[in-house]
Every structure is written in C-alpha cells, then in structure tokens.
Image 1: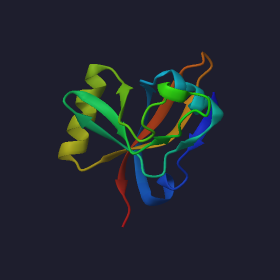
Image 2: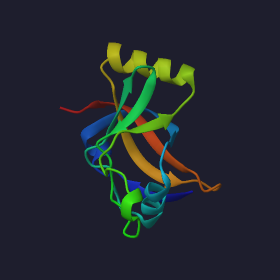
Image 3: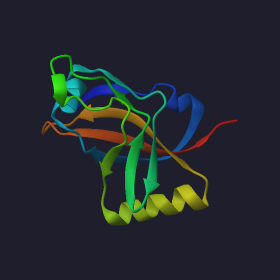
Length: 124
C-alpha cells in the first residue's frame, strides 16, 4: 500500500465512527496524475445519489503531458462499492446525520487506486 494523498484535517475536524475502502472510477490521465501525487483531499466529501456514491470536491490536477485527454480536475468521480454497502451508507448519511469524508487515497499492492472513506460527524 502506497499512500498518494491524506486528509490531515479530517481527524481534527470530524469524529470518525467507521472506516471503509472503495475503488475509484478514473480515466487514463487521471491515473497518471494520481501516481504523480498531485491530489488534494481538503474540501472533498462523498455523496450517495441515485443508488451510487460519488466523490465530490477532490482535486486531481491535470496530467502535464496529457493534452486533450485531460479531464476536469474537480469533476465528480464514481466510487465502486457493493450495492448493500451503498444502501447502508445511504441510511446512515440521511437518517443519522453522518458525513462521508475521504481520509486517504492510495495505490494498493495490485496497482489499483483506492480511497479510504470515513463515516464521521463534525465536531463542534
């Protein structure tokens, strides 16, 4: 496991109740930029919409050699989770008032980009 980016403010600003791992749907130049470490998780969060989970507000800078194939750096990225996990997250975020925040993005041993999400509540 090789961490690419971490959200250091998350543990200070939020009280973490549960952690989970999800895959990220990325395109070619985004993967190259992620491996280069040009990621910012500061304003990011995850939202459950229409039976899918999206990563919102995370910035992956455009790849320097990626001309027309670069995507929008702040676009919403779909997270890859099982359907029962999505339903549990939907219930917890809507009924109990929890928030999904990204703690870190890393590349696992198989070379796949993953995000560590936390089910958290904001501190006062």
